[in-house]
Amino acid sequence: MSLLEIEGLTKAFGGLLAVNEVSFAVEQGGIDAVIGPNGAGKTTLFNLISGAHQPTAGTVRFAGSRLTGLAPHKVAAKGVIRTFQLVRLFGDMSAEENVRVGFHLSTRGGVWSALGRSRRMRAEEAETAAKAQELLALVGLADRAAAPASQLTYGQQRLLEIARAVAAGPRLLLLDEPAAGLDTAETDVLAEIIRAINRRGVTILLIEHDMRLVMGIARRIVVLDFGRKIADGTPEAVARDPAVLEAYLGTTEAALHA
Image (cartoon, rainbow, N blue to C red; front, side, top):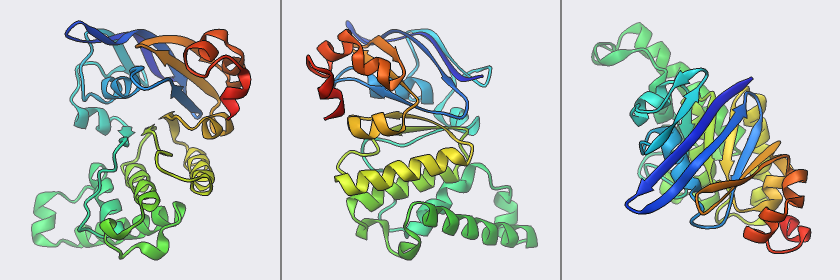
């Protein structure tokens, strides 16, 4: 069953076609990846899915509902949550507080409950704190819950951003280069965390340059080059695709596994 359906998606910036008639679907429950060289249109694609940009042409559907034309907060409210290439955390807030921010889409207290400190509001805050601790444990940051986000290592900050995104209750999680800046050991930890999130019922679509990570976790790969889709298939099929090897990975299959 397709959770996300992209059809003929196009985005022009002046005379530049950043995304050019791209179509593909993401099946519910999997981990898929979008790869391609710098400037291929990957982040623009995520911006179109998440509502940060509106397409010049084409449509985006999620769970059968049209996302095209919706503002980012309305896309997020439907269950499409994303992270970014550059970490966007509240540096002066603790790790736990950053994760608790992610729950704002699903909390029910409202402004009057907050002002009145109602029993329901207090119960909700306790529940949110417990859930935040659970997500910090999921990404290996339980012992850093009280630390300001600015004092975490870069790798820890990336994991914290993922925990905050999961707190928002995504059905589809868009990860934009989650392994950027991580070393091999940190990337291996990240792979396990992504699998663990997926096991919680979250469908994942990631942009990534680390081919070892992509080949290890992705069920399906979409390849972009100069805004166009040039391949779409299993990791094994993409690894043998001449267009991919020529446009992105060099001339030998070994380059894909480097």
